[in-house]
Structures are given as C-alpha cells and as structure tokens.
Amino acid sequence: MILLTTLSCLAAVLLLVVVAVNLVRIAGVLEGIGGSPTSWLAKLRLGLRAIETETAQIAPQVTTLNSGLGAVDNGLRQVERDLAASVAALRGGQS
Image (cartoon, rainbow, N blue to C red; front, side, top):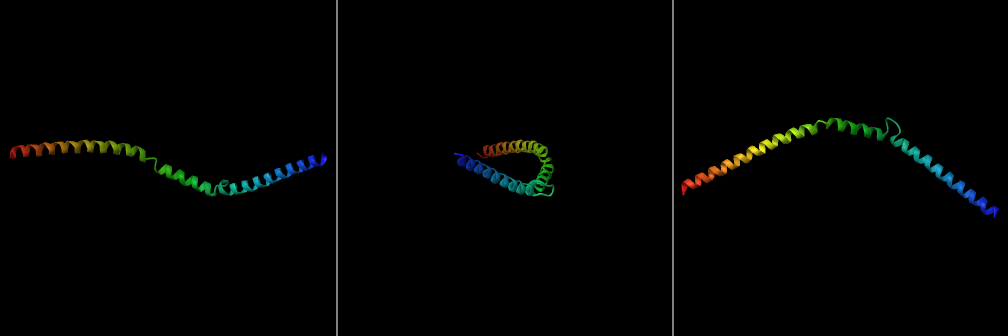
C-alpha cells in the first residue's frame, strides 16, 4: 500500500514538473512574439493603429459624398422624367 502511494505521489510530481517545464517553454515563445516593443505583435499593433488613424477621416467624408450623390441621383431622375415627357410630346406631335 505504501509503495502504491509513493508511486502515485511520484507520478503526480512528475506530471507537475512536465507541465511546469512546458509552461516555461510556451511563455518563452510568447515572449518572443509579443513581449517586447520590437516584437512582431508590437509592430503589428503599431501598423494597425496607423491604419486606423489614416482612415479615420473616411467615415465623415463618405457621409458627405453620399448626400451629394443622392442629390445628383434626384437631379438625374428629374432629367429622365423631362426627357421622357419631351419624347412623349414629340411623338404626340408627329401622329
């Protein structure tokens, strides 16, 4: 019985040691990816922030552009109605 308990304790300790060693290795890899200001993750974050800053002015400009294009659409629809009326009037005069 004591032998089984001792073996179980040793197996548990061995499991914890293996888990701890692998956690340290994983932390080392993650540190290389994103733990320093010159890491790939930091560079990616800086680039994404630059893109966000550069494109921040697009939303207000698109809103202004959409309202202008709406006015152009309304004007062109009126031109279409006027041309249709002109064609109808010319056809009515030729009959």
